[in-house]
Image (cartoon, rainbow, N blue to C red; front, side):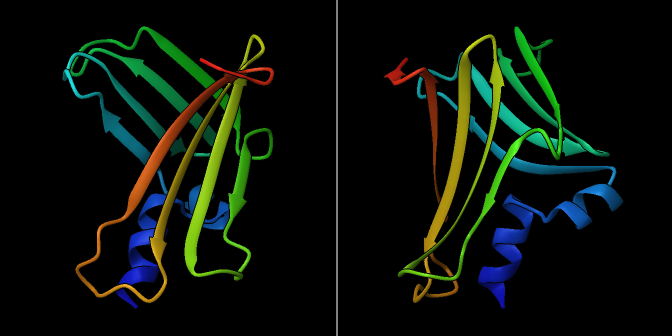
Length: 122
């Protein structure tokens, strides 16, 4: 049950997203602490924000939930995972989260952010 709650907190379903004013999907701060990324859903909009923590974002990408790439776990494999992506001027921002489905209640949810232009990782 706790695993389901963790994943719902990371990647709520479209139905939940539309009924929730703001839901965090993915957030991370880079190792040097000078930049941060956040994906969230606000109403029916997926927002990708990048910039210095606590300041106005340097980049904001907005897509409707239907336009954004939302790929929930398909029920197969040893990990439970979800992905969300948005595209801006030929650059795709893809956030993923996963956890071993046999993990204990205290297991850490893993995540990654991939930034691509075409087939090239930026």
